[in-house]
Image 1: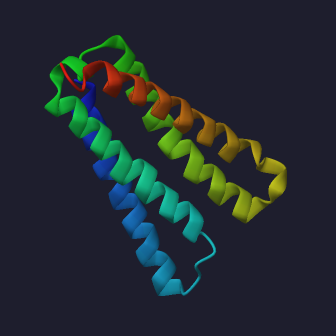
Image 2: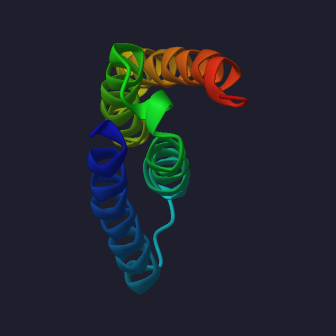
Image 3: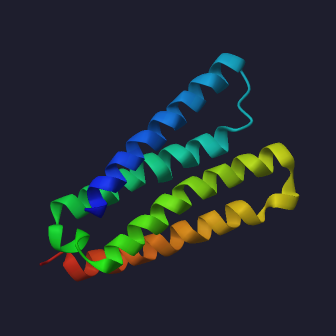
Length: 122
């Protein structure tokens, strides 16, 4: 089920985000803080909550639309913060990466909103 996969992926992403935060703290270099925050919130917290919704409302998580939404969210949750980090480290010329990642996340959230409205009262 996509909900279980999303929850597992979110746990790995959150662990990576937390470790990145610890490394930043040890180095006292917080330049990548925006990437760290987006990784934790979109990839860790939001991904887990959406997966949890799919687990709690099985009719929502079993649809093809949920699978598309889940994969888009997982891809975007990685591409967006990685893109932010790339822009911070390598410059504005690569701004298409976080823009693409953020648009993927927004598309995933739009699909999730549709799924919630279809299944919230089922």
